[in-house]
Each structure stands twice: as C-alpha cells, then as structure tokens.
View 1: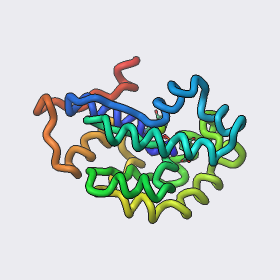
View 2: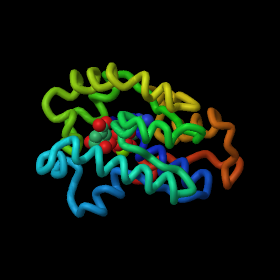
View 3: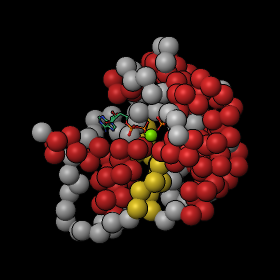
View 4: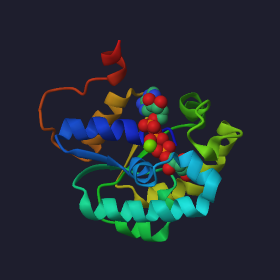
Length: 174
Ligand SMILES: Nc1ncnc2c1ncn2[C@@H]1O[C@H](COP(=O)(O)OP(=O)(O)O)[C@@H](O)[C@H]1O
Ligand SMILES: O=C(O)C1=C[C@@H](OP(=O)(O)O)[C@@H](O)[C@H](O)C1
Ligand SMILES: [Mg+2]
C-alpha cells in the first residue's frame, strides 16, 4: 500500500499509449461505495471475494496496464492468473510508506498504527510479491515519473513516444 501502483500505473499507461485500469477503482465503481465502507459494512473476507472477481475480470478483458490492490496476491488463484504476465512489484521501505499513506484514511488496514501495520503486512506478503513479480522496482527515492521510467527499463518496453520523458503530475499541477 502506497508504493504507487495506481499513480505509476496511470503514468506508465500514458507512456505506452495503452489503457489503464485499477481493480480497486473497478470495485468502488461496481459497488457504489468506498473500499473503507466495504471493509466496515461487510468485512475483509467479503472485500477479498470482490477483489478476486475484479482481478479475474480485468486480467481476462483488459489490454494495457493494470494496477492491483496490495492484498490481491493473497489469493492463490489470483497468483496463478498472474503467472506468465509481466508483473512489476513496486517496493519501498516502511518509513517511506508512513510518509505516503500514514495519514490517509482510505486504507482500512492501516487505520490504527500505519507504520506498524504496514510492516506486519509486508512481513506476511513480501514473499508473495516476489513470487509473482517479473521485475522489482524500488520507489523510495524516485518520483512517480522516475518509477515509470524504471519500470519501462526493467521490462525492456518501448514507449509510444520515444525520447519523451514522463511528465511529473505534481510539477504539472503547480
Ligand atoms: N514515487 C513516489 N514518490 C512520492 N509519493 C508517491 C510516489 N508514488 C506514489 N506516491 C504518493 O503516495 C500515495 C499512494 O500512491 P498510490 O498510487 O495510491 O499507491 P498504491 O496504489 O500502491 O497504494 C499517493 O498520495 C501518491 O501521490
Ligand atoms: O494491501 C491491501 O490489503 C489493500 C490495498 C489497497 O490498495 P492499494 O494497494 O492500491 O493501496 C486496497 O485494495 C485495500 O485498502 C486493501
Ligand atoms: Mg492503488
């Protein structure tokens, strides 16, 4: 959570000239409510069932860049579906995670003690991210645009507009 899957995924799709999709956004759109509300109303197990279906639908139908939620790899079937696909694990250290998502209420699994919860989740999941990943890209000291460039390098992908660097959305807003 917070490594930049949604942010970098969108930039990467723009660089490649392909569509972007995010399974969390698919779930929110289909359910008509926020992820935190799904967790509160029906619990994590229900969210995981929605997520499993959302990932399967997106992997079957989508051509382009797909951002998953950080817990989707917990599902055995999902990890199988990802086998053979160019999956990128965006990594970062706990300190950076706390800076990025520590005060953000949108992630129910980090609601109480973000730094500790993030560490515990990573300790339980790191091997799963490594298992499904074709490439691992560290994000700590990189802007989202630099992460997108590193992903392109790691997967040896060509951009739709060669020679152009990815614009940094935070700079564009100023
Ligand atoms: N490389 C980065 N450097 C600094 N902040 C980042 C970086 N990547 C993402 N962020 C910020 O961190 C937060 C979480 O990013 P997000 O893309 O939602 O992560 P994820 O989808 O992996 O949970 C957002 O506020 C985003 O702007
Ligand atoms: O890691 C997790 O268990 C989760 C990650 C979130 O997505 P991001 O990884 O995009 O933050 C979201 O799916 C939900 O809050 C649960
Ligand atoms: Mg996300």
